[in-house]
Image (cartoon, rainbow, N blue to C red; front, side, top):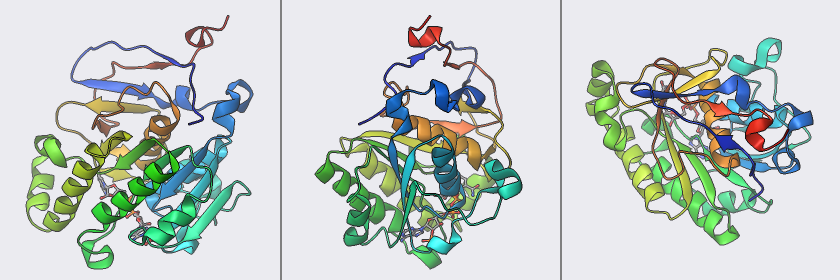
Length: 276
Ligand SMILES: NC(=O)c1ccc[n+]([C@@H]2O[C@H](COP(=O)([O-])OP(=O)(O)OC[C@H]3O[C@@H](n4cnc5c(N)ncnc54)[C@H](OP(=O)(O)O)[C@@H]3O)[C@@H](O)[C@H]2O)c1
């Protein structure tokens, strides 16, 4: 996997939350390593609001993207990071967009006809539209294809409240999880279990309530109850998860929110990279 290998991470614990400073995560092209510039990221659910951010930010940062979605025409420049270009069609010579269904292994295989370095799964939707098992079946298809092609790193967006984070969901959200969102959460829990048992280098990203606001620049990893977070910040975290060789949440299930304390900062200074 072509990844950022020379980044050094500093951490310190000040409370129940840890934080990325996303403004430091964005790499000026001039100072990025060659491997960072030519990473190819696969994004599943590419037209989704979080996935759009992943696609847009990866392209902006000089990477290539291969996206899969059932409705490619839905992919537009995201509101959060897109500024005045928001909602315009997202086209880029470094973007390959494939129309297909993640539950169909043949469609997933088309993505891996390209040389993929890292994978982001940001699938979603109501079960009445996508079915009761789309997340689990689709993610399993993706992971099988990854193993067949020797791709190791995957970030999967699930949700606060999934798996063992049930008590990190706000009370009102817990009620939804037990009622109208019950099927979705059964699928999310099964999806998470499959990822955790995959043997891949995974990061299960559990965001709090998602917004389409501009990135806050700070991404907190929360031990307690999580608040909201812009999709733009979630995307930044996912991209780091698949590109940074030393990403600290590999094999973990961080709950992230832009609301909370600050105690964990990724140092991207030259000194932190061992440069003068
Ligand atoms: N809303 C919240 O506050 C919140 C909070 C925490 C976590 N989450 C979770 O975060 C994730 C991302 O949420 P979001 O709102 O950004 O997503 P979203 O806008 O609902 O996008 C999900 C994407 O998945 C794609 N998709 C669905 N079925 C597919 C299939 N069979 N094959 C290929 N693509 C498929 C859809 O594209 P097509 O229709 O074009 O296929 C859609 O664009 C979801 O899992 C969501 O449950 C949401």
